[in-house]
Every structure is written in C-alpha cells, then in structure tokens.
Image (cartoon, rainbow, N blue to C red; front, side, top):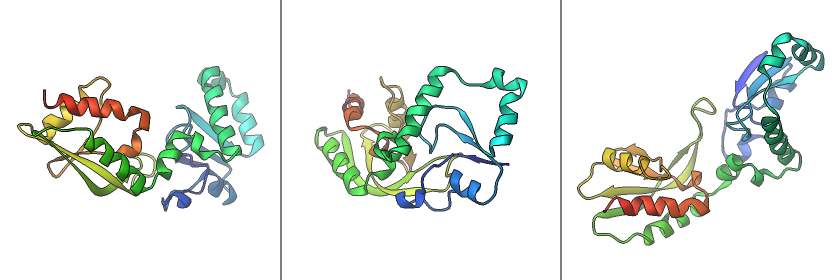
Length: 205
C-alpha cells in the first residue's frame, strides 16, 4: 500500500512539475492499494480515495468502519463531476489544473492590468519575475515560473500591508518575501480581480 497524498491523475510533467508520482504510476509499478486526497492536485472535494486491486477494495468496503467513514452524497457528486472532467480530458474544467496551465506571460498581462487600475502616490506596484509554489503536502518542492505583483504602501510595513489585505472582505491572501508583499494572480480567477483591486485601494484610506 502507498499513500500518495496528492493524487495526481495526469502526468504533471506536461505542466512543468517534475518528481511528483501519479496514481497510475504507482499502480503500474505493482502497488496493490493507493490512497490519496480528492482535493489538492486532483482538484475535487476534500475526501480520501482508495484505488487498487478490486478484491482488496471490496474487503475494505465490507468492513464495518466503511459505513461510519464514508463521505456524503454531495461529496460523491462533486468527485464524480471532477473525475468525468478527467475522463473527457477537459482539464480546464478542473480549477487547479487550469491555474497550473497559465503561462507567466498571461499572468504578467493580468498583473500589469491590475496595477494600471490603481493610481495612488502612496501605493507602489511592480510586476516582477517569480515562482508559484504548487503545494505544501502535495508537491512540496514543485514550483512554476510566474509573474508576481509586488506591493508596497507608504507608511506601512510589508507585514502591515499583508495583515490589512487578509482583513479585507473577502480576504486577500498574499505572501511576504524580502520585505515586499507579493500577489500571484495564478490563484485568482479573472472575475475575482475586482476584489483584489478594492482591497489594494483600501490600503491608502
């Protein structure tokens, strides 16, 4: 048995991520049962998934604990929709894969457009080269090239800017590196950019 954690169902090398084993890789290597998450790199609802030998999976399903630990119907429905997207090879329908497919140039253009909508003598915005960190428990060392929006505000430290962004409604989660607040629009849907702009505008009020 192997616990993969992330549960990648496609070859992540096609997205620029190396060294992250997939479910199929483990099963082809002879692992009898693989456990992994329904969320993370799989991109579905939070759940635990088991794949492997049909007789072993059947024995697990017959265990009295299965009824107590099984997920609800809504989780099954969300997981089914996610897996169908994989079957249809409609990877753009899976948000985490859609985000990972974005090129640095695409992200950079969006970051520049956001910066151009913010005019303030106190606010400094710069589009810089950087890396998207793919995950913690899933693909902990994997990164993708990206463009970052570096933010600073006169009269506020980087930690203060970050705290104010987190306190906005909805919260905007940034990271602080080398005294600068960095926003990675890879993890922001285009229709959500208005909330990022509104949160940044609030910094100067």
